[in-house]
Length: 61
Image (cartoon, rainbow, N blue to C red):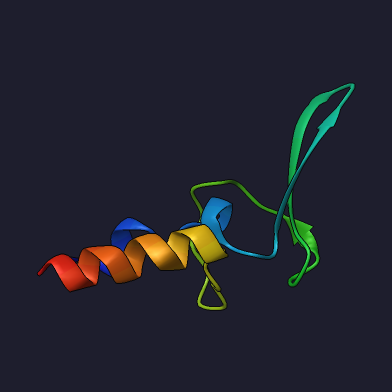
């Protein structure tokens, strides 16, 4: 199982999505700037449910 399959901003604990009058705003609270859900940065920390899914898939091997 490749962890890269899960590695994206939308699965990170620092990712924040806000609905505004102009549309959706995606923001990284850690880096302090706008991002997109599919971007990848080296500071990625998976959300709890994503980490559990990664662990489950690793055990299945």
